[in-house]
Length: 502
Image (tube, rainbow, N blue to C red; front, side, top):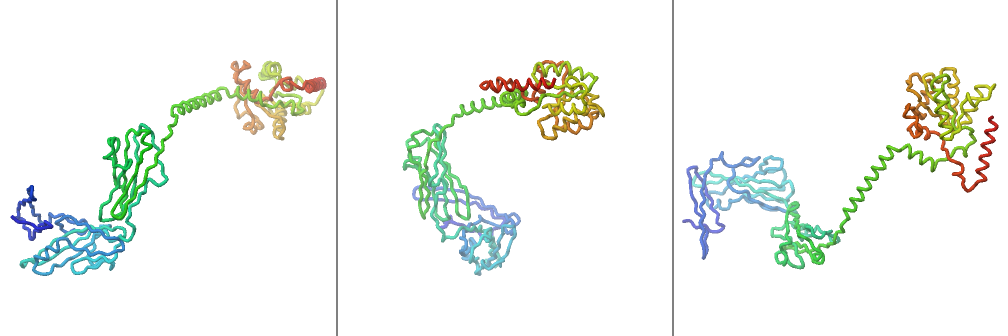
């Protein structure tokens, strides 16, 4: 039985492939004893785990070394001190550095900040690029044989030791307020920064000055700790206090988050306020009703836009009879001796004059005998507010009166007066047979299509669409109910114009 003194480490030298040993570890004190069995397996060199870049055979766990930035430290090869006691001569050590770019550098390295002194590797100034795995290979003589072994050391850089090492609370801030809601699970987050120290640290919550396990209702409280960040030894730790079934009485309790290490202690109280519940049902209903009304208004507008436009014009439109000195509301231009002439005289004129109350001018009916056709046509067009052009295949042939009427209407419209030209399509007409004046002005002119029997009723789309393009017609007594004298003057003025016109 071999008794191993502290630090209770056994170093086996010159292991052979035939060594099959069974070790029994006995751990005892004055009251008890434990026995653990371990079997030793000796591997050949090609079976040994090797480093990624330096490819050295390793037999042992990687050691850890921490060096503050801008400071120095001596690195010694693990197990070298024990081997030196059993060697015939001074061992030699070779150092290697596996860089972050997976390159194996052999001493001497690329700068002078690292220098080998005898068997150790001296770091004069630690910088970030010096981090990584370092390998040391030890060669020694024992009983006339040359033996060797390799070890690895993971070197990590941390912030300098001359900076403050007092822990700080990052979250919550001094003025931060947590919004909480009754009868729900509430989570309070505390985040602390712990500068690098070789000693321990702690982060915890207290409620009314007591830790969670000492609370009477401790089953409602729990915490979740986790590491959020690690930056060159400085670690950011997070502790989440979970409160189940939060009650109104909890608003009066004191919740404190604390952090501590050997350099200092900080604590901060979490300020709570009750979250005001929004009336979600009422808001949802209100939003739903608003969307339904908007959709309904959109549908109503799409279906009844002509009726709405006529209603708006009847309320807010201006009656042009009181803003100009025109004598006629509409001058009708059409192709003579055609089917459209019968449509104009029997249907169009009758509805416009008798049902809608417009003053209509038709040249063949209202012109004086013996007058000049050109002069009277231009005079009638100039004294009208609208020129209604009934488009037909034979309309506006070269040299016809209809062409003269069309040109006069378009010229009057182009001069910026109140005259407007409206196209009424009695039958389908191919655009290529239209005269040049119609083709040029088509994009600026309104076109209303007669739909046959569907357009005969006064409530049809044809008459509504035509009324939108015609002047607004109001009753004079509705416009001036409180000024009968002005109303009578307008009537007399209109009668005098009628008598003069014959």
